[in-house]
Length: 113
Length: 112
Image (cartoon, rainbow over all chains, first blue to last red; front, side):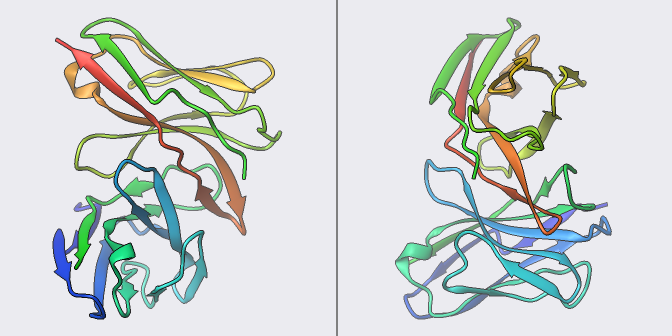
């Protein structure tokens, strides 16, 4: 099992460009999350999904969009990239809610210039 | 959101025990205490969690104060691979989904 896969590993964007960060899981987990981590800081929740077709905003959703058409995939879309979106992005999954463990992907490093 | 307070950094020697403290004075009765760690250039990984009683697993032990306002993660024999940032997190559940609120964590350095 691959677990949680994120692509790309690293990307440089120009201001105003758009891109989609991919997250795929093969654990059949219902819950999926997107976080961003700025240098030297903890993670902040961007969006989450409790199942296919259901998404909701986290702490810092502005400038991002998500969709969840399948259980396996939870892409994060950046429209009109800004330097403030330079960060490392982590996707995480969770079998069900409550106190279950979250499993994190390896992250995507994004640089907006 | 319930917040946690941890020391910014700690240092220990290889093969010695490490006690990582966490204060969470605003914890509510239903909040679980979770610990995650993040190795360099990796995503966080789960370490341990508890509610009221002390907990042990293959990675670590979690000691929770009787009033639940503080807890301590214990690594019994630290190795160089334990060097990481350790996050103490109180789980807040929103519509069944977890909302992990990460602080800055404790950066643990292990000396050979």
